[in-house]
Length: 31
Image (cartoon, rainbow, N blue to C red; front, side, top):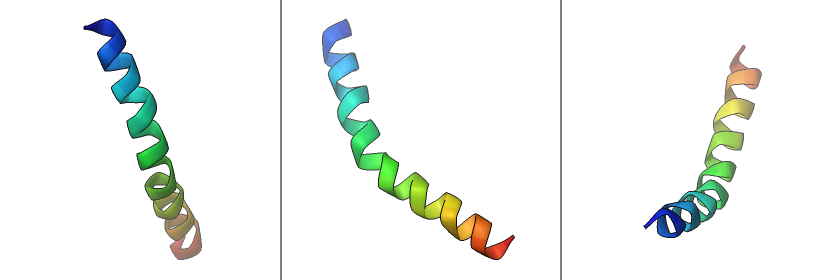
């Protein structure tokens, strides 16, 4: 079960990384 969660976290990290990058860039641009 732990391995499954670790794999899920690892994959979701790659999926969410571009989204977080875009959000942080837009925050910097607005700020």
